[in-house]
Structures are given as C-alpha cells and as structure tokens.
Image 1 (cartoon, helix red, strand yellow):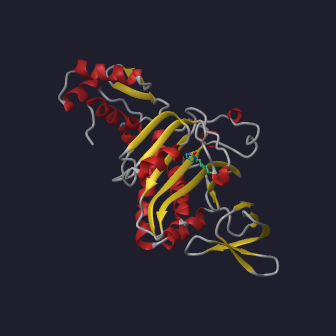
Image 2 (cartoon, rainbow, N blue to C red):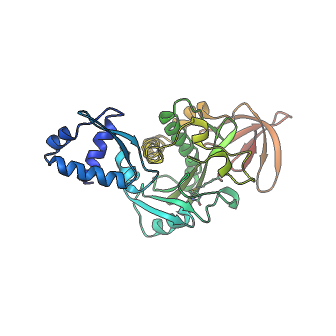
Image 3 (cartoon, rainbow, N blue to C red):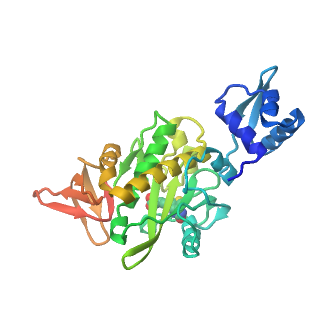
Length: 326
Ligand code: BTN
C-alpha cells in the first residue's frame, strides 16, 4: 500500500499524540517545501481534521472527522489481510448483502464492507438492526478460514472476543461483557451485535460473512423507543466521542490474530479468554430456541463453543443456538 504525502503528514501528527508538530520539521524530513505542507494541512482541514497552530511550535491535532472512509481506517491499520480491501458506502441496504455478492465473486480473505448507514440492516433471527447515518460501525468482514462448516459455528464467539478486546484496549474504563453467543453488553445494555452467515459446500467453508454492528456515537435520544431501554452506545458509556476508524482497525487487528489461533488450534485456545470476558457463565438464564423455551444455570462452555445449561433437575442440556435472557 502506498501512502500519500498528506496521509504521511497526518500519521506523524497523530503519532505525536497531542504534542505540537513543527511545519518546518515536517517539510525537512519529508523533503518538501513549507508551502507544500501548508497546502496539505488545508486539505486535511477540508476533510474535517481540526488543528490548533501554536506559534513557534507547530500543529496540534484537535479533532478528527467523523468518517469511516478507507483512508481513515488505513491510518490505523496494522494487519496483513484484514481490512486490506475495503468497500465503503455512504448508504447501503445491508453490508451483509454486499458481502454475500462479493464473496461469491471471489473477494479475498479479510475484505471488509462498511456503510455509514444501512437502510435494511438485519440482526439475528431476521430482526431489524438500527443503523443510522454516521453514528455506528456497520461492517461485514469476509473471512475464509480453513475449517469445516461444523467447526465454523464457534467462530462467532471468537469475533465477540476480538471486538471486546478492541473496545477494552482503546477505552480502558469501559467494560463490555459477552452475552452468549454474540452480544456485547455494557452495564447490562447492548452495544454490539454480531451476525455470522456462511457460504459453504458439504464439508468446506467458502466464506464466513461476519456482520458486526456497534453502537458507537449515538446519544440516548438517537435510539428508537423500541430499544431505548435496552441499548447503549460506547460514547454514552465512555463519556467521550468514539474514533470509529481507530476502533475498526483495532477490531481487525484482534480478529486477524484470534482467527489464526482459532484455525491452528481450535476454539479451545480462546475459550479461557471468552469465559473471562463473558457475563453468561454461572448465571441463571432463560433460553429461547426456534422450537422451545427452558431455564437453568449456564454452567459452562465446551471446547466447541457450545453452551451447557444445568437444569433444576440436575440434567445438563447443550445449547447450539438460541437467544438467552439473563
Ligand atoms: C444481532 O445482534 O442480532 C446482530 C446484529 C448485526 C448487525 C450488523 S451491522 C453490519 C451487518 N449488516 C447487517 O445488516 N447486519 C450486520
């Protein structure tokens, strides 16, 4: 990936982490004129970056644009495959739909599809997913792991761990917890949902379409009355504006690492971390599957990511899919 002069300047200013960066030093080290630096700074301002100019010291970054365009994400990206091909849309029906099409056309492992807004965002069990413009992260990742369709069913738990780690790394005082199989809750309210779909042949996974919806910068009043009591956003919990591009890059970083571990060593290698980050194990829960509803204590998770429920009569049930209420 070649990086433009403008992006190189931006990278250096971001790396300064709030300290002033001298225009003259930028010009000298990049081998361009002071006027060229000034022109790039103007362009960055037009893109939504804000700077304070401190006399005799230089530029201090005071704000980043609220955009997920590929340039923003690439500034933070440390991965080899994940996010190296980005399909970015202002408005899209659902990133899942686009991902299905691109995967069939052979899009490479790690391709991501991002929309600023989804008009038909969908969740698990065919539920709608609120995806207002510019507020959240609405993204699908095309993953091509070398596993069987049966093994792939636990991948969604790996995704939940990756997203949790990314949030915790960037916002240390925020504590997301995983509700099996794939919701992230903060203070009991949902901030993230994961929808993993599959393209497969009999015993071969062609692609996993990993849809991640994160409520990032919503205010409480942005949620519809239907979900206002059960949803939250990272901004509400962290008390600060969320840099969505940095968060996307961090998720991709963790997901690439954990995917490699998962493919080489199976879900068992991530299970302990999943348990530490989960709010499900040890809780009394109510399970709703397509056919029935039952209760018990979530007593553990198997090496394949299957939930074990101890019922009141002591019998253990294994839950492969469903919704749970804690
Ligand atoms: C759930 O909790 O039910 C899963 C929600 C998944 C939402 C994401 S947003 C990006 C991707 N595109 C969709 O239409 N859905 C997923």
